[in-house]
Amino acid sequence: MFLSQTPPVEATDFPVSIDTAKLKDCIAALHGCIASCHACAYEMAGNPKLAMSIANDCPKCCIDCADMCEMFVRALSRKSPYWQPYRTWCQVICEWCADQCGEHYEECCIECAEHCIKCVAALNELV
Image (tube, rainbow, N blue to C red; front, side, top):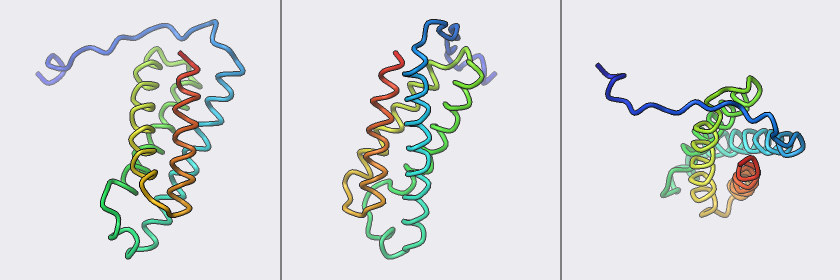
């Protein structure tokens, strides 16, 4: 069976003592990242010549990054017991997106990379 082959993901209680200001800053950073990733993906998709000249995973990484950030915002809002794995995956994907978009000189890519870096920093503050 598929599920029996999957290693278990540990559920943990949502920390009662989490700093409210850090949580708000993290959610704001996540929303900024979501918006800039959507804008970058839209800009790149709207310019086929530009998109075809890119030799890495932009704008695909932007789509994954926005999706993961949105999922983590929802996990935080419901105080999911799986908030730590969501945070880890969000961090990994934001770092990947920052690396990919950071290789380009397009304004949308630069802004996206900057928001991803801010998001990673805010995610690190939650730990």
